Image 1 (cartoon, rainbow, N blue to C red):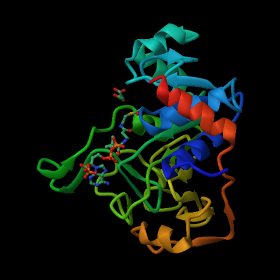
Image 2: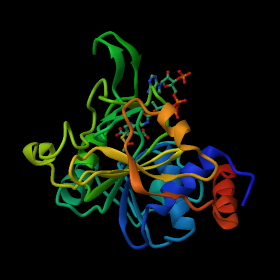
Image 3: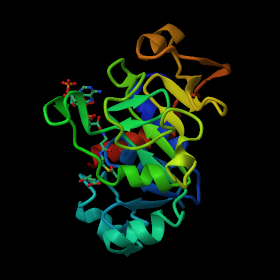
Amino acid sequence: MTGYTADEMMTVEASRALREGTVCFVGIGLPSTAANLARRTHAPGLVLIYESGTLGAKPDRLPLSIGDGILAETADAVIGVPEVFNYWLQPGRVDVGFLGAAQVDKHGNINTTVIGGDYRDPKVRLPGAGGAPEIAASCKEVVVVLRQSRRAFVDRVDFVTSLGFGTGPGDRERFGMTGAGPRRIITDLGVLQPDPLTCEFVLTHLHPGVELAQVRENTGWELTVSPDLTRTPEPTERELTVLRELKAAS
Ligand SMILES: CC(=O)SCCNC(=O)CCNC(=O)[C@H](O)C(C)(C)COP(=O)(O)OP(=O)(O)OC[C@H]1O[C@@H](n2cnc3c(N)ncnc32)[C@H](O)[C@@H]1OP(=O)(O)O
Ligand SMILES: O=C(O)/C=C/CC(=O)O
């Protein structure tokens, strides 16, 4: 398959991380596109939860935000926001939290709050936390999707909005996090997964046509490469067609 963009490869690979029949708490932006692609391809029974209280949403276009009416109109049920957190997320009823980020570090901590400078006077003020810290804490596992660059992939995030593995093994337990934490970071260049001993993210997959040097250039820490490094399968014709239809409808 030829003729697709790096962003399309990232979105397709992110969609593949979601399994049929599981429950996914969807972050807005890149994760929402990938989750809806998964539901329209290999995982029609994927249950999408958006933070606005929409359970089992089946939008036929990409929602503009968690408050987009298409979510409530197509959901199996609409419940209150505190109920989503207290009755669904925190008791461990959500399999996967699917999050975007402005910055991520080698231990999978996410920053969507501020970049540089002081908290009150940062270089860049980002959208903030929303429900992401709770999603990162309590989903059985977390998948993160973002474009890879030196400014985004840093040794240590400027601000820990949503905890990954903190400073390493044991931190999640110390902070009382019930979920297993980030299992995958999917980018436009490849896929990273945490080393079970160090909890540091290592490169496990390279997307087609991407060179290892390119990934190193776009990573702000000394990147470890898995001995089992593999190539991501290219997007199929169907995945690309459905993704493009979804975007065109939005
Ligand atoms: C359930 C929930 O979803 S809770 C909601 C919590 N919020 C989130 O999860 C948001 C997650 N997403 C992000 O953080 C994204 O990086 C966003 C929304 C900040 C920006 O994403 P995109 O719209 O794809 O835009 P893009 O990556 O081009 O960045 C836009 C601007 O943000 C700023 N920015 C984003 N990332 C960075 C970074 N790592 N360092 C510095 N500035 C940054 C820059 O000003 C950038 O503009 P520039 O590229 O011209 O310098
Ligand atoms: O407030 C939040 O947690 C998420 C907001 C995202 C959105 O408004 O779509």
